[in-house]
Image 1 (tube, rainbow, N blue to C red):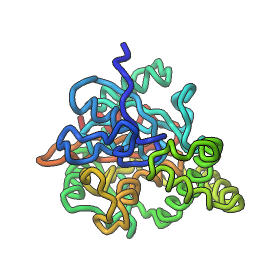
Image 2 (image 1 turned 120 degrees about the vertical axis):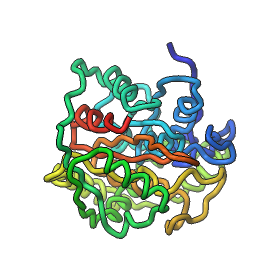
Image 3 (image 1 turned 180 degrees about the vertical axis):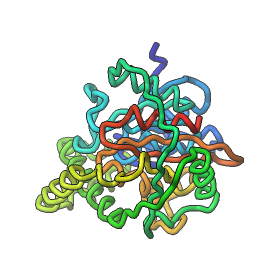
Length: 317
């Protein structure tokens, strides 16, 4: 049974969840803080106990970010793993549809239904090889978040080793270029005929995105597909990558300043989810135990390895 339509950041164009014609979506753990976006209402509804399962969309992190900030689980599946028919797009090269639930087991149930998967999840290997992404990009994280994820790595068991991601900044740049150009293309007519109907922040972002030249979009799209073709090498020698979903707990509603070494709130929220979106890898955010505002661990798997990824993530339930 469908209960209702939940709030999203306007046109799914933001990771905060506090920009919408009907007002900001508050975090159930602290109504003065953001729920994350863009699938803010879906995560908040699950966290508040209103529904056991919700559907969101994830372009750069829009399922995983609100899941982490609200203390629930959320999956970005492999590209085309779940049909996107009927979903209003943001960026056709990056959009995915994913389930949000209170635990990984329920996310897996939602994924099986939405993806049409008939088989049960496979058994996770007894000895897990864990990769921990490293590099200056991943050093900017609040200590409490880092400590919670380090504990999750220990609870998963197995051997853990560092995996260098020296091109994280390039992956972020490619995402921004591709998403911006495609978002402007989708909203071209609305920008020309009724710009006053957009929320001011959304309109400002789209006006900025208009400045992306065609040559940069074409070059970035080609580079993104080159990197996706070689993405499997990122997990050479490991079964899963584990890192924070978001480097900070939920910021206050309306907050846009830098945090934890990031220039803006938007950059901080997207920093650890965007690289895997660019590479087309499946990723799931898992809520971690602890006091205070929620923290999420992000597990990243092989292309098409959604079932195996969920089986590993279920160990943290």
